[in-house]
Length: 245
Image 1 (cartoon, rainbow, N blue to C red):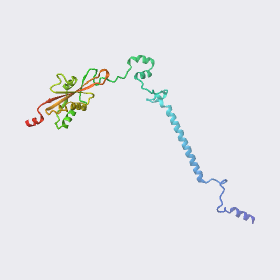
Image 2: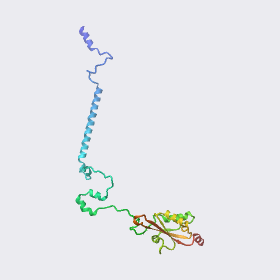
Image 3: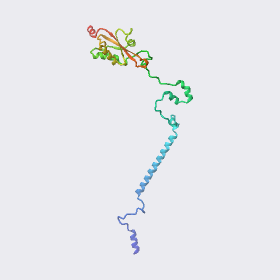
Image 4: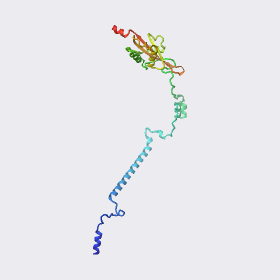
């Protein structure tokens, strides 16, 4: 009888709601699987970090073997000067004493700024072209006063007349010489208007004209003077030509 009661008591399951001890029991399978996954991730991260370190070390050790090696990495640090350094100093600092002594006669120095403007010397010179657009300015002035535009060009004769300051055989048959401080068509027109209200430019008998420029360097490096010349060819006024036609 006692044996039956002992066997019945041993086979009875634990009461509902009574927890099984976690201290002495086996851990759940979910927690074990999660721990294994975490350990695998940590090992993978450590492996990748080790590979990266090896690649970086190999790159530094083989950096000097290429065709375009950077020799500046093996040079000591230099200090950038706070003030401009002349070309002569740069040549001397980048050469050995023997090289400097051998090449002292070939040192390059920057050319000094030109004080003669477009002229090669202190002598006045004719300046080719019409960079100030004086031809266009003359025709614009005529059109603004109700006159027709006429053909205008740049001529060697007008350049020589400008160089001669409006005198001499090149200044024929009719010339207007005007000096200005800068090569500016606006300054030329303004000074002509101040002189005779622009009547010379508004001559209705003008059939064509040409312009020329010259430059006279200033003495002792001072600012020079630009000189312009306008040569006009006169004929019958346009209205008379139209009547004759």
